[in-house]
Length: 151
Image (tube, rainbow, N blue to C red; front, top):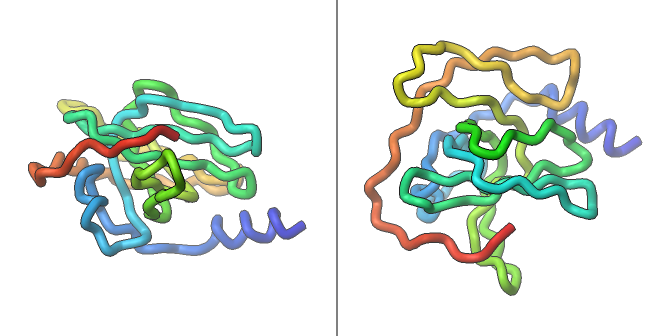
C-alpha cells in the first residue's frame, strides 16, 4: 500500500530539475537535477532495483538507480538519455561516486545532429504521457578526475 502511495505522489508532483552535466555534479549544490549522457552499464539488483551508468564523452560517469517503489523501464545499453532524479554522493566503502537515486524519470536524448524536438518520458504511471522538449547539455570543460567505483 505505501509503495503505491509513494509512486502516486512522485507521479503527480511537479519538480524543478536543474540542468547539470556528469562533471558539474561534483560541485553542484542542487539535489533535483537533470543530466544527459550515454548508458554504459545496466545492472538489475537483487532488491528489484536497476542501476545504470551514465557517462559523458570523456568517460566520467554517474550511477543512476531506478528503485522498486518507483518502477521505470530500464534504458538500453549505449542509448543517449536524459535522466531526472535526486543527486547524492555515495560514500559507502568501495563506492565513492555521484548518483541519481532515485531516478524520477528518464527519456531518450537528442543525439548530436538529430533534428527531433520532443521525447516520450518514461514515468511510473501508464496513464501519464508527458512530452518534454530537450535542450542538449554541453559537456563541461571543468577539470574533474574520473569518478571511482562501480554500481
